[in-house]
Image 1 (cartoon, rainbow, N blue to C red):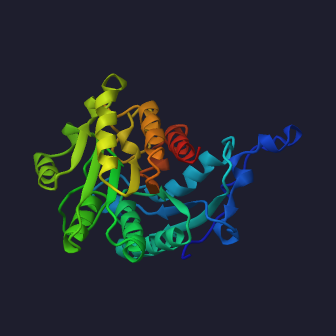
Image 2 (cartoon, rainbow, N blue to C red):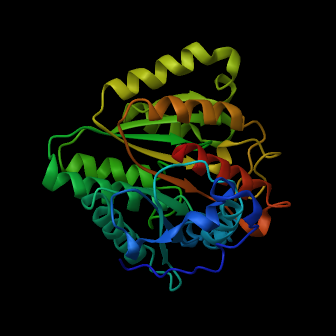
Length: 312
């Protein structure tokens, strides 16, 4: 692993008088170097270089630390071992190098049988995460169909001179084209007000499945579930990525671009549980947590809930 592990965020309350069933995350997590068996591994991507290149508000490089702190004091209800693989950091502007290191770590974790959960960081994490999964499958199941499911207010299909937090899925599409693979991309929660006509054109050209934010509500659950199930039926392995700006601004103020409408946390959690029943989820990440813009850790707490939901 290239990453370095900082144990300082893994601290919190200890209810010693209530026995082992009173454990919290900080009492359960272990460094990945102590891994004895395949399990879930947290891996941070401490970067906001892509957000800066995308003309956004920086601070997401502090997201992995804030997310660990929000997770630390949660009650632990799981059975599997939980490991922390530390952070891959982008501190020198070399986003492409950081993405390569993160992808290599993801590939190594998948090769060892682990379930990686990336902690962002800007949404530039997505290109690195996908590359790690694709590189893992290239030697194991080269014909496997990879699906990308993105909860996001934005398509992130932009064309730009430099890669950024707004370009990862276009970059993935370009890799798929070079390798003559299908680009299986579904984006849930898209804001029409925050994606240009050019981006909708790109989505149509690339045959992206999507639902708009105003379609993502519990009254529309049958359509949402049909869309999700149809997508899952057409793939073999799923990469799930959650951009926190898909949530309403009142729930997730600590992002570069808060959502005026958004998708409620309860609905996202419901869909995560449905996704897990498919047994196709291989890799997940949480993107765009910006502690500098957060209010009383609202966004970090929502992100922690989503990570916990993935591991229930």
